[in-house]
Image 1 (cartoon, helix red, strand yellow):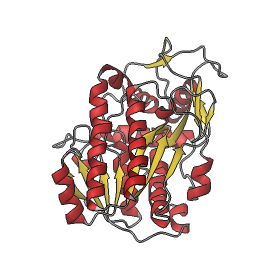
Image 2: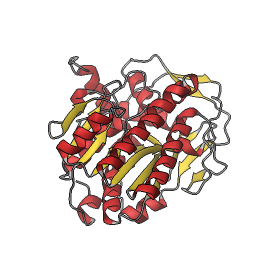
Image 3: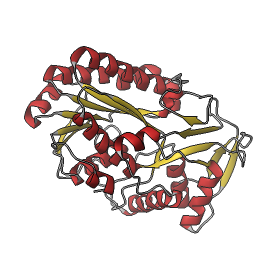
Length: 346
């Protein structure tokens, strides 16, 4: 348990349902909840998640959040009083190629989940949102009041769910939180979970795959940005710190049921693509091949969070904010994946 979680007054630890709890971020949230003493259940259809990623301490239901009957059964069996909602699709180019699938999986099925929660009287919902809701902001430090103008169906699908939560909260009396992530990376420091999805597109994941020879090279998309070294700058947040923020945010929702919250999740500090790749080389003690490539449409020069609300309202104290630490944990997990024997459902 983190110092912040230990120091802040904790509400009664009610049963929490984690949707998408067998996935990358969801599995870390499950670990953080269990570590802090919360009763946890998980629903996941295992399309991109892994059954082995759900620890024994959590009740597991294989299924989809589009299944209202299953949700009603889970709520009744587990006495669910809060939901952490991670289930969804997250690949931006895929959302452009198949937008209707994203509006179905991310928005339509979230609507089913919200309706089931309302019917069961679940009073708190914490939603996994994204910095993609901001599109290409005109400022380099993004606050929660920065205009939300997504440039792809993924960002819109998440923003539409935020809107549904706000409207349904006003109509039905529950409160909600929407945490807008920047670039999530790293893995559980104890080696219990990490990014395991094949074909992942996140830079640090791609780079540590290249270290182990799973990729021949890492593409650097654009070297003419208005940044110190010409490559895009992003805010990277360790997945375990992000999971801690979820536990604190849930506590905040329970402590003040009349108030909802929307917060950025990042460190407020950016690193360029080349700086990240230098860190990977440094941690791995090797030199991965870099291939220069054209810019991708819509990529801003710099995208860094202003996480002032997260610090001020939740008392959040990140433990793993150093870039080399994030890389080291990601690399350790990648080595674990390379060594582990294939398991059923893996």
